[in-house]
Length: 306
Image (cartoon, rainbow, N blue to C red; front, side, top):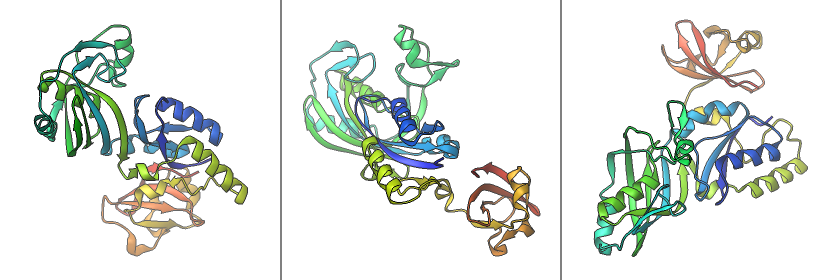
């Protein structure tokens, strides 16, 4: 089984669930999850967690994200993108310079109302499922932040811009809000996600590329340990924590969820202060998990051993 994270480039026309479904066939394992839904018409970076790395999904999905989008003025739709049902049309009455300034005015913290066509849940029900049934429910605004905004081109009624945002922000809604302030409405015509945390578009691989790379590496060496060049191992995401190795005699207790005694860990010089966390490894180098110091012991925070 593979336990790690792969930087996938989701292609246009495929759902995020579809990416996971195909990866289950490529890697012949069921335990796979993505770190943040991309709309079917959107493309770009989609980190996918495999095996025990699925425990990282929530953490990785909360990282900042960067996008490149095309805004289309003069239209509103029920989905806030160009693929939705048209609700209104209007002739844009704004200059290129004014539109550039308007887009950049959204930089910073603000309250955003999540769209009905989203995976967000209200009272246990996905908004998108309700929206498809023609039901609209009250949603609460939430604080989001847009930074590193840049307008690359304006050719009315379109504008292309890039933006970095916090977790929970919707670029479709950003386009909708820009259109509302412009007085003519707007939708998101296209979207490319260029970064999720430390995952960048230039390093992402399509599913076809992944299948080919896996086949080449399987043919070149024994990959039964699940180690591939394109998979980031779980401990990579905790690389800033000190790394200690547990003695062989203490390992069975740790694998049963027991505390790690400080005297069973080496090197002693890397033992953290009270409350500090460490990476713990087995004598053979296998990553065991994350532990937190409490007095003379380190208590299990999260187990990743396979």
